[in-house]
Length: 321
Image (spheres, rainbow, N blue to C red):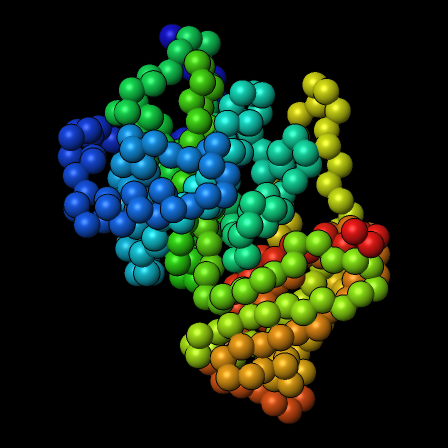
């Protein structure tokens, strides 16, 4: 059987495994994630069943083994991000493409935000297809996921973006998604930076009317910088058109709001901030926030270089609802 693959990087063979060992999670861990999965109501149509959840917990071990080798903290499985990854994997597999864009023209941080996520997300994507059929057993699916992840980890600098994403020390959660249909397999990893809480984030704003963005640091940090980037609404693809391939930019080139630490400090009460924002053009505003252990209350020279963004909020601005 001749296998054809579509991918963003080179592949290496997967190691052998024992499926019984693969699902040997602790009862406490399995119950913890089972409860999270049952309580999550968003994207319910992409909810993992028990088998898929166990496979993802095993894949989580593989991801954390990779991170451990680079001496960075392990990540936890994120249920919502996993459903976003499932959604993308299914669409990509059923339509025969692999991309960071979906058929609606949405990028990873837009899909995650539209599903209700507020944290920063960074995506890895892998795909494989064959002229015959792929192994649909749990062991076969796990092998394909491991192969995809190992292909990311086999990258060499400077073309090692997926590997650097996996081993980024700022990540503390990951969404894992896959879909196998006949001869098409897709696998997505959605790495998350989650350090803030966002009560009542508005998903839609009226033009030129002030909205209040509430942010809670839980006393673990102070806000260092807020920047919002303007983008036009995504354009759905035409019938038969495939999404673009290659890497994606994490933000547009048009920054609208730039609020430094000393201005943000004015909006702090205790551990919470209430930041006023207005939007003057119809479109999407992608908000990235950076934090610091210290509060800066007077103007100084600052830079976000080398700092990880810890938010991925997207607000749609349009005429009055």
